[in-house]
Image (tube, rainbow, N blue to C red):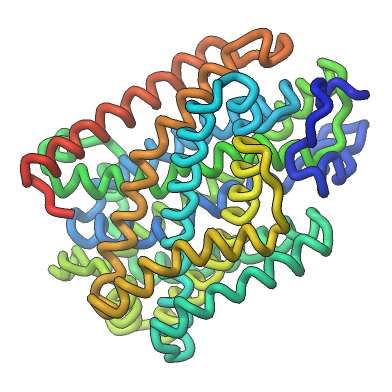
Length: 441
């Protein structure tokens, strides 16, 4: 029995475990085998929830919240590097490591928190995909929300084609998103001096309850809890060896892959906020929060007929992309925390069904105008869930025994611990503002 599964338990994502070959030899040849997992993770960082928070932040406050987008992306790079390190070094994904380390009460609590995060993610994808279908094809939102249940079969079909095929589809859709925004940004002609100024953190963010609320939404939309479980599992699809040298190489190449992919995510998330600031805030339209309003205003304001269509196509690609990764994350946390397995399509149907219910209710009660509030709220929920994934991750990756001598460098552990502390402090401030009525959710 190889040492990547010392207890003889079922490996993470067992149907594709160690299924992607990696090559020896020159750097670029080895790197090619590790390209892919980072992009599966990165799509979660540019899902429809990001769109809602970045559009609201850019239209209301201009470029000021761009610093939060950059900071969130730095957090994501550090935390995802720890996540893949855990998977490679210990042979366990984050959910399995929690199962090994904690008793039944803690396991079930953390599982519920992880599931809540995945449902919040799914909620954003349901609404985002339904909005895209409505904008592109005129499909009523209610029907679009219900139709998202059918993506279960898309996932089932994709997974049957092999893990590399899934990654190729994800990368292709991600490039569609990036190109769409690159074209729109070129026509938006933002004030680049103000863009650069927006990268510097401002004290106003902490002093304005609404700005803090949106900042937390951006953090929740960027640093997503389910991605930490996902990355620690999908890195194990690579057929690297079990020696320390091979694992160190896998960690290094996997980190390069995820860092490059997350820089692409930073471009997309920054582009959404910059587009909103340059197009809406600059023209006095500071109340644009709905994706639908952004769609309707883009072409007239930019003077580019295809601008709104590119925006909607990118949104649809974003929703489809995020669907794939949330499904895998759901499978990972259920199997890891409670050792319960079910067919992927059944797992997806249950999670998506739970997310569809509040989406349908919101659409029926509020109409199209209620979707933005629900999207931003779902991302704040993700931020509230984040410490329950980050704290165990930091503890496990700092433990020499758990990591079999490949524990994280001290600077990385300290940085990740500070990230967890910052998120917790901001969450406490948010809860205080809600309790005192400074923010109404």
